[in-house]
Image (cartoon, rainbow, N blue to C red; front, side, top):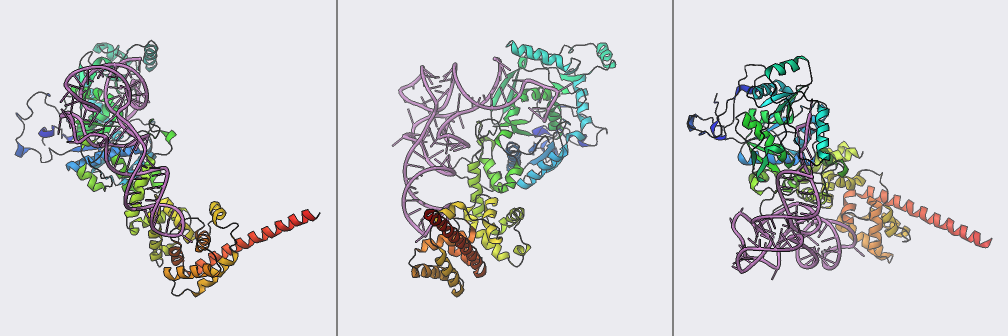
Length: 545
RNA sequence: GGCCCCAUCGUCUAGUCAGGCCUAGGACACCGGCCUUUCACGCCGGCGACACGGGUUCGAAUCCCGUUGGGGCUACCA
């Protein structure tokens, strides 16, 4: 086993072995010593030593939302671009907020998006012993200490300082307790945490591939908790330990972690571990420029799937939120994105999430994708609407394909597509009120529609050209505009005032169904007539009284 | 409050690192036209931005400072 992975300097100890086994701590070279002075020569180096290893580390405290999905995507793209590995790690050390259900949803969302991982999912809750070993390491090297201060007391002090507008960070009073004092307090079973001993002065500079060099003064960094009183590690510890243990070379994450990074850098340094490269991604904001939250409605990946968005479109849109290829292209497959993605072209400013543009892009995908590929998603949407028939996958398969093709250029989501297709599959559709008002009411259509219904019997062969000729003939024969009949027929056939070309619709719907729907319209028109007559009678009666 | 980040059309962005090629380019949205007796697609056109103020320079969207605005962090959450 190579202890020094040179190149990236990452460790490859046996630390992934089961907890409690003969784990050995990796001993790192001090940062400034010549990296390869005594290291194996290149031919002895592990062939994997230059390999890029990135991870997405969600916390299962909620669904996968667009921000998390974008972080996962950028990691995935970076790995693809560098020929590296994309690892999935689950940061579930906060057992109060983490749920299995959330984890399942996150995994499902990632699979749906096509963000496949090479390793994992690794659950931090399975590796608690590992973090505790690192706590011991940090304690014995004097970089961490038991803190017996009560949480409420610290909060009290913090609050007071804030009210007094003072710059205040917590510096543990128990930092320099003697071994005896510590033992005594430990024995008396007081609650304790383990905190990191932050240097009183000095500067930590985070070298960030997206944000540039960012300097933080130690005097602004408090003695943060590494291990909670329940002996569970905090994020600052488990995150760093795992990044070291898993040989993570590049940490790509949301910019909300930038301010936490100096703390983690301190831990790396205390551990004499090689730092990964950092890249903090700008945060996706809601359309109002505020942080994405429940107030912005559903922003989870699941939601977009349910609304009829295609994974490719979501990936494409998210990739463009904060990154661009440097030219005017906007439509990319995931593979193309992987080929082009570089951190140099990631923006620093926070973008706002724009549903309009996602919808446009989704529409582009729906338009371009072959009808066959849309089939499963459309079927699912039709099933939800209760108008799916297994025949559409069997003997009426061609009909179903034709329906999809007919509506493809008109829908921005699969749900819209299904809404449009539904009237072809079920009689349970209503006439759109606007359509009735504009094209049916007060149009004196009864005779016209009846004539057209009868004329349909003679159309032979049943085809668009013949249908158009027939319709125009009927309208012309009754000295009516063809448009009057077209509009009425459209409402009769699909219930809406807009649809694909009416002759395409008639053609696809077939003679019988077209005639029966015209029948329904005729019945409706008769009812209108009757109502009108009745009302006229009432008016006449009232007048003669 | 303190610390950190950011700032080009309503939105996503190109241009900023290496100042003149920018009377600032593209896309979404919006508006108009063409196509079509519908709607969409498609095509053509229009509207629309360098946050503000100082510097530096022959010259600034680009460099520097300040202001303003937005975001993040400031937990025994991640």
